[in-house]
Image 1 (cartoon, rainbow, N blue to C red):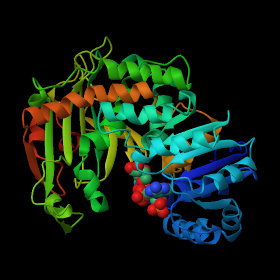
Image 2: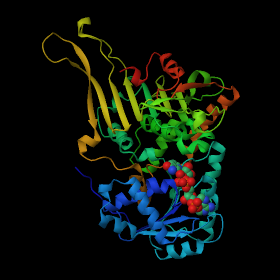
Image 3: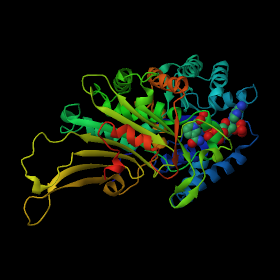
Length: 492
Ligand code: NAP
C-alpha cells in the first residue's frame, strides 16, 4: 500500500552547516528519498553553505559519501542519484563575516519566486549572526522560512535570546522549530488514534486511565557528543523537547482542527497545567542517574566518566520524573516520564494503562484480570499494541488471559516508515507548521524544566549510578512502585 505523493512548489533549501553531521546523516538522505518518491519539482535546489573552500565538485563528493553511508544501497539507483546531484550547489560562506554572502544572494536571485528555506544546521550561537546577514543582504522574501534545530537554549533565558535573534528577521509564521519526534509516523498516528476513532476518546481521562508512562531509552552512550552532553544532560537533551512534546500530544484536548495554531494552542495548555516540581518536591518526584560500566547487547561498555574523559561529573544520563497535569481531564493521573543512555534497549514508547474493571463476574478459577493497556511504539518497530482479556481457547472452563492485539506498521503496510526529516522538510517547503513548536510552547516547556534543574542544584540532589545495559537506577523503580505501579518491562 502506498500513499499519494504531491509535489511541493519550486524551492531553494539553503543548509547552513551543509558539511556537518546533521546534513550528512539526515537532511541530504531525507531530500534524496523525497526526490526518489517524485515529490521534488524540477525547480528545487539544495544549497550547502559552510566555511570550507569546497567548489560544487568537492561538495558533490561530500553528498555522494553521505548518501552512500546513510541510504540503503538498493535505493541509490544511478538515475535517481544523478537527478538529485543536479540539484546540489555549494557556497563557501563564513556566516560570522562578509565573504560569500553576495554570491549566495546572486544564486538565490535566480530563483526569486521560489520558496526559500534557510536551515540553521549549525551551533545556536551562530543563529544571530546568520539572521543578521540574511537581513543585511535582503534575502527574506514573502515565501521565506527558517528552520532552527535543537537545542533551543539551555534554559528559559537563553531560549528567549535564541528566539529574539531569529524574530528580529523572521515572522513567527516563518519560523519552523524542529523536533524530529513530531515527524515520526507513530506520533502523528497518536492523533489519528485519538481523534479519528470513536472508541478511545471517551476513555481518555482520569475516570478510565490509571497512569501513563513515556519512555525514551537509548542503548548507546554519549559517543562523540560527550563534551556537549556533559554541559546538557538528559533533562535538557530529551525531556524539555521530545518527551514533553509526546506528553502534550497524549494529554491535549481535541483541537478545533488539525491545523498549526489549533494544535499548538492545545499543547500549550497542557504545558501550562503541569504541576510545578521545585526544591520542595524534586527529591520525591525525580530521580537522576548516571551510567557506570556494564554490558550492552552482550558487549562490555565503559562508564560515563571514561566516555567523557573526566574524573567527576554530576551530569545526569538518566532521569525519571513523576509528573502531574492539574486539569479536569487528568487530575490524579500520574505521568511517569523516563529517558536515559546505555539502558537495556533502544525503545521509545507511550504506555497508557487503563484502570481495573469495576467488578468481576468471574470466580477465582478464571485467573487474574489484567488491566487493559495501550502501548504506542515509536521505535524501533513503529506500531501499537492493545492488550485485552480473552477466554483461553478450548475446554477447561472460563480461564482468562491477556493477549496483545498487535499492529506493526512495517508489517501492515509492507513498507518501512519514512524518516521523520523527510516529512518535516516537506512541511517546511509547504509552509505547514503543525508539527513544529511555537515560541510560547518552547518557553512554557522551559518554565516547567527550569525549577527542576534549579532544585537539583539548590538541594544537591543525588545522582544514582546504574550499570550500563540495565533500566536505570533502582531509585527509578522505587519512584513508580511508591505509587503502586511498575514500569512496563517489570510488569511483563
Ligand atoms: P557539526 O557536524 O559540528 O557541523 C557544523 C556545521 O557548521 C559544519 O558544516 C561547519 O562547517 C558549519 N560551520 C561552523 N562554523 C561556521 C561558520 N562560522 N560559518 C559557516 N559554517 C560554519 O554539527 P551537527 O552535528 O551537524 O549539528 C548542527 C546543529 O544541529 C547543532 O546545533 C546541533 O545541536 C543540531 N542537531 C544535530 C543533530 C545531529 O544528529 N547531528 C541532531 C539534532 C540537532 P565548516 O567547519 O566547514 O564551516
